[in-house]
Length: 293
Image (cartoon, rainbow, N blue to C red; front, side, top):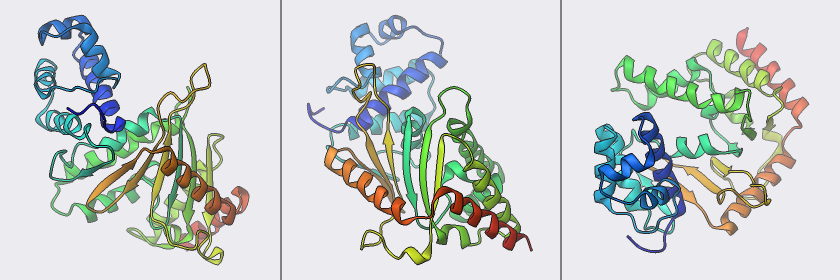
């Protein structure tokens, strides 16, 4: 593999390998011995600090850990993507669609900064709202497959409600996302009440960008999330921040400091144009009452 390249897939690959090893109940020396590699090599793989990734090592580790075919294919795809400076998670090619790269980043985040113009973000969706979206997006899925998708979103939401170090979440929703009916008016009423309730949590800041605010950036902007991983004891970033852009045909991850800063500035501009937290919560409860009648 190339000496240069994206740090996102390397770090994600390392996290998944570590999780698989722990699930298999193996120590690092035991796993390294089984694939006939040094413990230091495996350590560097798990921490995302290696630039030379052998696909053979990934295949053998997946075999040793009894990883599923989907997980194995996903990790091999991450290993290949690690050579790219900025990379697309392109469905149906290197990484299977069912292998969700972003979920791993989200789980490791200390702070998420998001904007969504069209839909309530997954971390804030009720099961009924999520279920309707899943059925619409994947009409050929079985009921069991739909429920697995819904349960995945529910597990992801634990990062906001856990007692120990819940993730900070600063989100702005365009008014469109609140007025667009998903499923039924009853489902929307429950979703809007849930948003209002969640907005009272100390780790969550939720603001609504009303139609009356116009276009704060001068150009329309799509859904984005800036993922920050916090600071270490030396006040240095634990990991470089990443911008996640969700697209219909794939996901884009931006890692340059200039890109990250640009999206932080964009979010700050949108946030200033939005309603404050109290008025946003009042609007959510008002819209919930309207949907319920």
